[in-house]
Length: 602
Image (cartoon, helix red, strand yellow):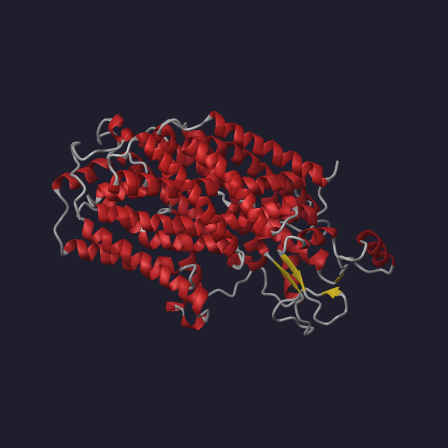
């Protein structure tokens, strides 16, 4: 059975499972739709969180970044891992104790202000749409590989599938679907890594093969890779051209941005208590570690295989018979362009320009010692999917990896759609502008918002194809979250004196400064010499996070303190179990409940 059969087999099997789960877990109430009824088991929620967290950026792009940036790409690994620890220990249990449906819901009630709620919605939407653009690029990469279609066609096919189970099942359907998707993606990631590690290092444990010797030699695998890349004019794999300040800021922006991501925080609202949220976080860390410790090895192996199979290969054009021409080249002692390259070339994600007209593919870095110009331009996001093909692994492994890539991209895209949907239907409509709408009307509004979000995010994903990496697109979302949402969540939990004026100021300052900086240096002027303090757009969210914190604290100190009921509420949520009866938190607070005051009529 060939690769095509296994690819269709695994994709159809897994998609049938996802759709079946969505039908089985169809949301019957707003509580099911927004927070899965607050009754997901911590272990299952940890697995769903792992799938939500290990998005296209983690599954597809992180290894690609590490493969082609080397040590410089490790900031994504460190930032996302550290960020989840920060979120799990510092914020998640307290957010669950507050008992709301969404992050804007928390902001609106904690800061007793409709204006604060609306601004939080704007922040959540900007973060989520930026993030989902990266996910949709991952969907496009995976589907274009699977179906052999153009990248943009792949995006819209994947979007239609996300729409079905996200809109039908809501958070309840998404949660159980993500449990299944985690199982698929973790097998899809680790199984080929084991095969490739055996081939390159002789060690079946990828993490050990990464730090071990190349197979059959006494040469460390990383030393072999360093020699390969430097001989072609690239930066040493274990080195980086990034400034230390930029490495630090990107890592920190990813960490603090994680703690402000609405689609991650909302996962902790689906369990029954703060204690369950802590257990869920522990399970999630374990499930996430299974993939994150393998990613550096996958990246290194991909770089070795790509260089050895593509560099100095003789190109075969589309109007030539591949098998016949390949046999001729081999008979002449040459190396034909690999078949996997021709397959991926149809997606538009690989490019070859024969600059010197010799018909041989030269892959070179900017400091190539032989003075030969680079002719091969790969999209780095393809390499986790292409790695099994490059290494000539069995067809069933290739099919499994495609199914895993689709699972990773679709799982996070679905979670983000829930944030967008709930922000519009619950926070803007139900809690702000149309409070008298019925539950049925709110469900209809939520599903309509999700449908609109699918179309908008697919369009953004197509635009994101012009950017180099899924992970870099996603990094912008983390920067926005770090500067706009993290300060008001953190201060809202740990500082009773933080008031609505401070929260509004902090969110506006963080959002406007970070968005403006990213937009200017990515789309107007890309000159790195003009970066503030030498910090790139990927890391600037950390710098402006401190500005947001200072502004929020300063404005709060020169304006009236929050009402005493709000200050008591802040003290309560830091002591799990003393907050108030559990049922109140589950159904959503109303202005007449103890400890809350009505939203102001600002």
